[in-house]
Length: 256
Ligand code: OAD
Image 1 (tube, rainbow, N blue to C red):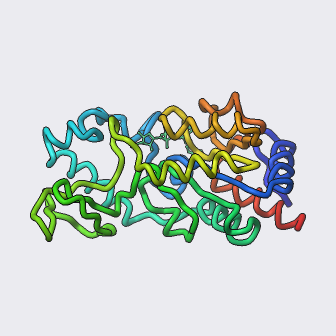
Image 2 (cartoon, rainbow, N blue to C red; image 1 turned 90 degrees about the vertical axis):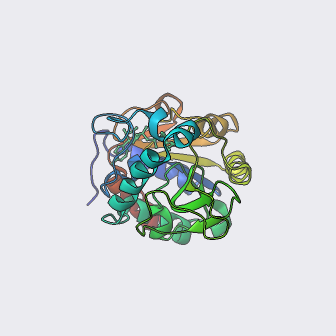
């Protein structure tokens, strides 16, 4: 028996048909895919940015002005992540990559810094905004995987004693060139571009959706609500990604 979504079965079948006819798939995820794991999203009621001014915790200026406050915010987020695990939405993306598409024909582009896609087992993964489980030295720029271990209030580099920062992209900062170039290439090459759980308001990430559309890809959106991607999507699956993505994968497997 198939689950039914607000919009009924038709959009699910339409999305499955686009995927069956596709050779290359690129997927862009946002905070919504981790919502069912218990990670708060950014915008909307109870969002992470509620109660925090972005400029106070997520800009290089904020870090220069008050690094302790910024580290407290990110250490709290790191601690919260200890209690969460990938959900069926993350796992369905792994299945798409490993069991349905050829390894070189699938690219997962995420705006999330929570590391849950990696933990789920995604392989060809581009983390546009970095990863909260990694730090970077503000002096010697050395990068280090620290996982979710407890860090000092103001952690310092073991090599040069410089102040460490989370290895993530803040507002007013550029995305890492190599990651962005790979994301742009995967977007230009794909036949289907799937947008999952993002409000699609933060650029340049959201620009990939428009670039995919311009390049002639079919755009599939999965979201519990309308977003800035909805009007350009060819099909919208309205509902939680933790239910819709597994349903989509089941449908593709049935047809195989
Ligand atoms: P947002 O918080 O802006 O949007 C989350 C989206 O997920 C919304 O469109 C929700 O409707 C949707 N959503 C919530 N629960 C869902 C579920 N169970 N299934 C499917 N969709 C669901 O988060 P992002 O779009 O990821 O950047 O935000 C983009 C960037 O803005 C983030 O990477 C971060 C933030 O500021 C930086 O920190 C640089």
